[in-house]
Image (tube, rainbow, N blue to C red; front, side, top):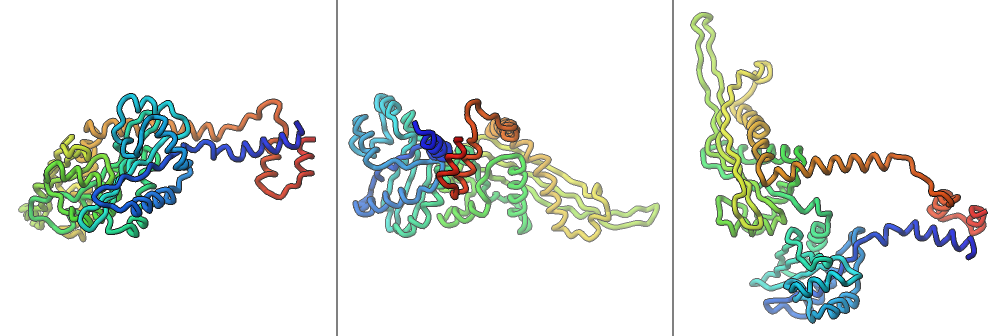
Length: 387
């Protein structure tokens, strides 16, 4: 073979290797229910295909998918969600696609409901953690929201196992800052521990949009509905049964000194709820009494009662709530996984920093790649590399 052609071919293979590493994804024809017109189903199918913008996936053509379904004896894409063991085995043997995006679009009153799920073609199983649900007024609104939903659906598996913190249930007369300050502090502490959370503001926005912004000890099915809307694995909700700052007068007879001292009390629990079943997986009780005399006078000289209350929140969450959450069975494995991931990332970083080893028998490849990336080298220069 001509040496110039050999080196040029080698460059093409090396420079495009990332493309061939992408997993192949097929978009099955959406299943329409509730009187959705065929034209809307076709339009939705096109929206799905055009909205997939991920370097991790290479889109498989409709024709290739149809041939694959025919090979395992399926006639419609709706059959993909209920494969029998024989069909699953056959699907796993078919080459050319790793994942299949299956979807359903239906009418509910005047609105459209859309559900999207990922099927692992190697096993024939639906990944229950990779589900996206949208409820919109029409196809235009669906087109606006579909890209963000698909990005979450097709993201790395690590991003899928998230939790969401719900507004706390407050059963006592309490200051207006309590709910927000408690949840913001809880969110920050959980993120510091490496736990993955849906953004608090996003949670509030999504639940309010769906008239579910007052989740107060609901039935399990309502928590399941909230979990689907938020696309999370677990829900975290605090219940606060006591929150008070006591102002106690004191008078020292020997010195004549008098004034006030403050004592803070907070009691309650934090529930960990499965977003798949709505059942409580664990409960972390907390009961904290703080004597603020332990804080230097210079620090709290100008404090108001609200400042003492906010300090009480900052104390109880890291000292009582977070340790309990991390020890609960629902999060214990995640904490251990986080440590393993950090160790793996450190090892990978060390490998990347190691000097590359040039394979024997390949001369001038670095110069060739540099030449190809600049895009301005001539054929004569390529020939000189060979020489």
